Image (spheres, one colour):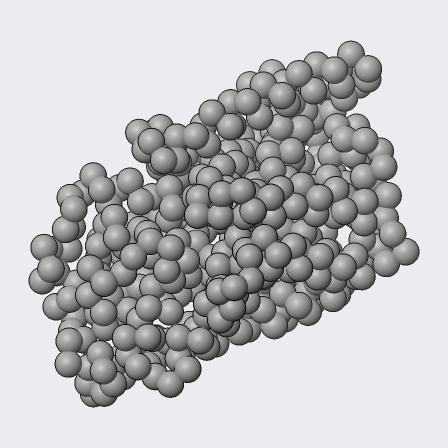
Length: 474
């Protein structure tokens, strides 16, 4: 078989502005690991698993690092904005590129709905009389306008959103450690490391209940892969992307494991409830003046940050799909500010379904959309991992050039992550509350399959776009 070399410059992001500097990419990567899944979703998961939730976040965090190192190797092999779809297309075939691109778009549209829902819940903390759907609609419009202006504005907004989240989390950890060490505040009398095990043990509801929280835990990690979408608009991806990915372990250790450990030491797990941010609840217990309000503002910025990222990524993914003939060509157009304005607009309209859900079923909207987003995210991660396994196989055979950022252990850890994600999918099937997402994804897959055959009938060349050395794979 002849050797096929893929030129890294053969798929440039035509028309995009490389307007994301190192400072912005680093903070996007940091902020991507801190979202509403931690700030709001952790409350329900603490009620289900107690202190053992810390272990679930640590376990999932290790797997997420495996996924990101696999993605990092692919990104430095060929940095493109539509990374997940492009790698699926190259290594698994055109259908998988098409399916992954549209599914990642769905993931962010649905995640945007979740974030709008969460933001509306946070605003109700101060203004309970304002309906959730009104708040969600206002935030949707504001972020939509910001994303139309320029990628630099998106990067700057995301930088400051992430700065607020990171600074606040570090502050929470420091204050919590102060309560544990010096015993000040109203929570000082009961704060103790022993809170992690003295109320029915570290696994108060059994290991099975703890494992069932993995679906919510994985949702909390959605968006860490957003670094891959920024590759086509980063000023120096060869330098910024490895640095952003390699700092992921300490971010997980600090923001998830560290923060949860501290608040569960300060306040016993039995005092947390679903639908209430454990961070807001912890600061209310500590009794710091305006502390709960400050934390509520922080978690509000976390929700808006994630929705802002969703606006950004959906428009780019639709443009990648259009460029490959897998979406209407109108999505390929860039505005005068070099943003995929039409794709962003259509995505915003679909996110508006979240506003409707907040009007119709405000108490269930968050749970519905997070389960669907998690299923779509698991598919995306699986495509990254499988593409990485096939890429390493091609490199070992001398068919493709090696990446300058190889994943440790080659493809072995990618296989571990694949097994883990399939296990989580199985857990979702056993949970009556989240099982609905599998039905939604089955319907989504059927709709995409019909769309694929329609595309092939109209343009047979769509099904032929892949690297020739992988024509017999899959």
